[in-house]
Image (cartoon, rainbow, N blue to C red; front, side, top):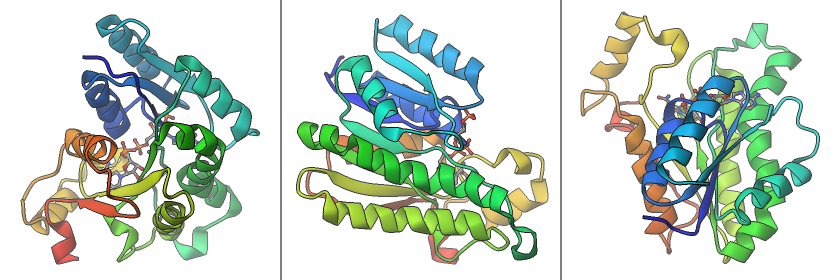
Length: 246
Ligand SMILES: NC(=O)c1ccc[n+]([C@@H]2O[C@H](COP(=O)([O-])OP(=O)(O)OC[C@H]3O[C@@H](n4cnc5c(N)ncnc54)[C@H](OP(=O)(O)O)[C@@H]3O)[C@@H](O)[C@H]2O)c1
């Protein structure tokens, strides 16, 4: 199946972004992925998706800490397939930042990646998305509210991303729909991969008693792209019910 539509996913070479790229590609979309450090993973997905369907995937290296000009990068991204219909702001930095240890370096690291990139890509893709009657999907986090202890900068970045979602839904209507998805425990953060007790404690608070899969997020993204013509400014929690116990 091929659809003449293109989805651009930031930070899409690994984990949830990668699963989303593969899922939407299976549904016929052309895929553009930005990556930063994951060159090998980006090459792999480029080869894999283009072997399934010729000229259906492009990858581009972007570091949100050093990007100078969102406008020219966005033009380059649009040129790959001649259009962009969907922007998925997925790239993220996640680690604790206790109040007494924060500094400008981790402020820029987290805010520029999680929030600034989404705002400035929304601005630079605005004319293209308007032309395509496209949509923007921001990947937030259930921990945006209540906030996650000792993660002040991350919490601010995701709260900002949720505010951005709602603001843009108003400002870019009626031509562009803007929604967000807040994952719960989908894939353990790499730093928590071996913290079995911490994982058990989190699982005990999830009514469905399991982690989600990256495809749970990908399916919701597809729904927002394809079957949600009358939905904008909304946030969908995908968390196995975890929000009920927060
Ligand atoms: N995993 C979960 O269970 C969970 C829970 C709640 C919310 N979320 C949200 O869901 C989304 C996906 O989660 P995830 O765990 O798959 O994300 P992740 O692996 O933590 O990060 C996704 C990608 O962001 C990119 N990135 C980081 N810093 C960057 C920078 N300075 N410039 C450009 N790209 C940068 C990385 O690309 P490179 O690898 O190429 O450097 C990374 O692969 C994120 O927004 C996350 O906050 C996830």
